[in-house]
Length: 306
Image 1 (cartoon, rainbow, N blue to C red):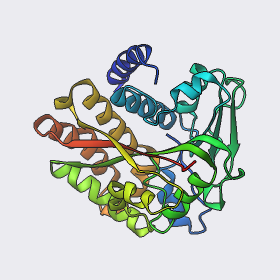
Image 2: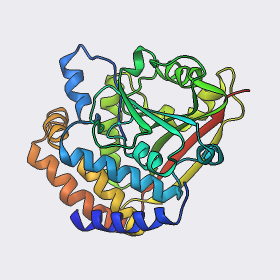
Image 3: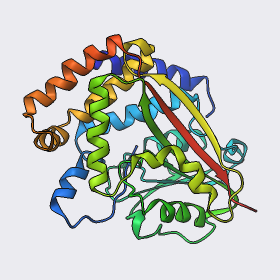
């Protein structure tokens, strides 16, 4: 895994030098079983988990060759532009942008303060708050509101509220962007079972992963929004996908073999922790040598009516 992290850092950091252009919020959970189930989807202080989220950011940036798809770079360069990242986690996306666009202002919000509070750019601020209680900002406050990889967290009956809050705090003429992975196709048996396990566990919490490919349709139902755009990238998981495939393989493996996931999922599947770990450290790795599962990342973005 360490070798692939080095590949990522070399490949993606070199790519970023050529280009101009992770974090989760959740409402308070009363049910202890549900809380345990959620923990491995949320930012925490575990070094490996934070490293995974940093890598996830650099991976997405590499795949798109940019940090965002909305046409706002000119405003960011001019300065006085205000950007909000909802569910910012360790703040990797914001740190990347705040260091580059020094004349604009960046704000991150998350329910769990894993973001840096002491060593950070002067144009970056973090807020601790629960997005499901409403974003703690006035209407029409930001030029660009961004949210990434919340598909494991937002329940089916919460998406419309979340989208409405993103729109509410966006200035007229400003932009919103939601970034999500879309379930892989052409999967082998191990990957198919992995997705089914997560899908079923999410459904038990009211989270419906099948809604994600249709987020553009959900956004279009809201007032004050222009045409919704989809900027999508497809890649192969594993060695048949080259360096990018190896990186996302490591990200998926790290996520599923974390202590929290390995303690929580096996009992629900009726297998031991050792069997579960073997699936990801051996079976999953071997399967990817002979399969070419395709995973998509999609940026859904739109402009608020002026």
